[in-house]
Each structure stands twice: as structure tokens, then as C-alpha cells.
Length: 308
Image (cartoon, helix red, strand yellow):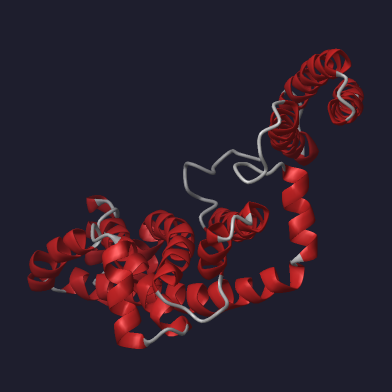
């Protein structure tokens, strides 16, 4: 890899740091000049990395772009003197993250490790099994699948209070909301995926006198894997959204949704944004892990074939 993008990136980060110092010390002319230099050099660095090969070049471009967005956020809040109660800068959010790390960890465990994981596993597993049952029964396909499409459009704000009344204020009620939100995407996508196997391949399996389990295991499930992973990735974000929103309608004194609602009422926006950051990181890492697993399992699919 060429060194020019690294040099531009280093110069851009130095200029960005000096520009923030100039803003803090109320030197607008120097801050503006350094900001222009920072944006220009970081842009050149991202262009250079985008033309490169290898994992480092592919990773450097989104990392620099993310840092640039955070820096612009910081500069605009400080430069325009926006009240922190309206929009705290990233440094204030990072400071709140460090101060309340133990509390954020407890909220994460309550929401993600309990409600999200349990509800995600139950919802996706049940949706997959029901899809297999629908595939075997035309009666279920005609009766249950349209109902599933209708149920998937139900608003979460209508489901969450009912689940809280049924299952109480602890995490099982939030897991129940996650089950409802993840069940139908998995059902619909798996059903569509099982129909992806071509007619020629199915006729070939029939000519071999293959049983339904053999055809399902060796032909139809592999063909359905891209659709199944699409549902898994979609549900990884839906599950987190469902659990957080469900906590708005009744929860103990822990949880990311509880923290967002209570701290927003107290105008502690830095802690609110820190909690949102935790939720965003958890959802992004879950999605990324599933994308890597999909790449490893469905490497034969045309969308991955030939990619490095």
C-alpha cells in the first residue's frame, strides 16, 4: 500500500486536533483555516485508501469517514455554541460514558443479554420451524402465511403494553415483544427461501427417489440460506429496537430503554446519547457478526463468489 494516504491521514488528524483547540480558545480565523485543511487532507486520505487493496485499506476509509463526522459534530456544537442540553458534543458523550460505565454495563446486561438474546433465539427459531411446517402443508401456507404478513405490520407501541400486562415488568415481557417482532420476518423469509430451489434440481432429486428430508437438507435449505441470513440480520436490529422501546412501557430500574426515557426527562442528554451509543454498537456488532457468518456459510452464493 502506498504511504501517501497515511501521510494525508496523519496531517488531517493533526489539523483537526489543532482546529478544535482553536475553537475552544475562541480563535475563529485559525479554527476555520485549520478545519478546511483537515477536511481537505482527510478527503485525500479516504480517496487514496479507497483505491487501495487489502483489509487495512478497506477498513481505513469508513474509520476515517466516521471520525470526520464526529469531528464535524464536535466543531459545530462548540463553534456555534449550541447548548449541550440540545446536542452534546462527542467529547461530552465520551465523558459520560466513562463516568457511568458501570451503570451502562448493567443496562446492557438487562436489555441485551436477557431480553434481546432470549427473544431473538425464540422468535427466529419458532419462525424457522413454522416455516418448515408451512412448506409441508398447503393448508398452513394459505391460512397462516397471509396472517403472518398482517401480524408483522403491527406497531410495537401497541404490542409492548399488552406484553407488560401479560408477563410483568421484568425482562420476560421485553423478550416476548422481541419474539413477536422477529418471528414473522423469519417465517416469511424462510418460506420464500425454501421456494428458491430450481425446478431442474428438484426434478433431479425426485429422479433419485430422494425423500423429503433428504431433499430439504441437501437442496432446499442450502438454497434458502441467503434468505434465512437476511432475516437473521434484519432481526438483529429489530430485536434491539423492540426491547428498548418495550422498556418505555414498564420496567425495573435498569435497562437501556428505561435509561433513555428517565435521563431524557432529567435533561441528562449526554447520558442519553451514551446509552444510544451502547445500543448502536451492540446492534452493529451483532449485524457484523451475522454478516461474517453468512459469508463463511454461503461462500458459494453469487453475491460472494469472486470477492476477496
